[in-house]
Amino acid sequence: MDNFSKARLNMVESQVRPNDVTDARIIRAMGQLPREKFVPQMWRHMAYLDESIPLTSDGAEDGRHLVHAMVFAKLVQLARVGDHDLVLDIGCGYGYSAAVLAQLADSVIALESNSELASAANVALSDLEIGNIAVIEGDLTRGVVKEGPYNVIVLNGSVAEVPAALFEQLADGGRLVTVVRSGGRSAACLFEKSGDLVDRREAFDARIPPLAGFEKIPEFQF
Image (tube, rainbow, N blue to C red):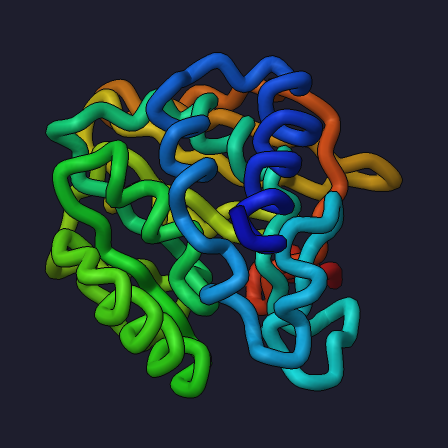
């Protein structure tokens, strides 16, 4: 067993399983996928650490990141992804989140606004011969209307608010999961759509880097 394989096993056994992740499909996917192939070469030594991994060269807090394995696993479990589901993965980065989701769902639309990250995701997914994912470059806040509606939408980063355009792309009974920042705290939230209504439920406290473009728009005051 090489060092990355040992680190991957340790990630699952020390970060994922002990934090109430019980879905065997998620555990199996994260235990098999080589996470180190979904980060820049310069950050591969960090791929299995219990922290978010920079996906941009400067590693800035407001740059793009691969979300903590534990938080990501719990978000995916919260979304209750089924094997017939169509999933929209927003801010896919190098494609790790999409690769995990592809093991659980029928197909995944992986949306990425950064052209370099989108290209890297295509390379990584192609190398691993994962065929039920389509990487699309575009504005993260707008989703991908033409491919919807979606049974599940996953946002890879924390947000101040979820744009109405994304809720509109959920199928009836669809679920959207993300970490929402409000005041001084942030929590993983599950949004479920029923007809024209969207219900929100906070599931657990979580702090992950922000997803750029999802800042709250200030209300105009006279």
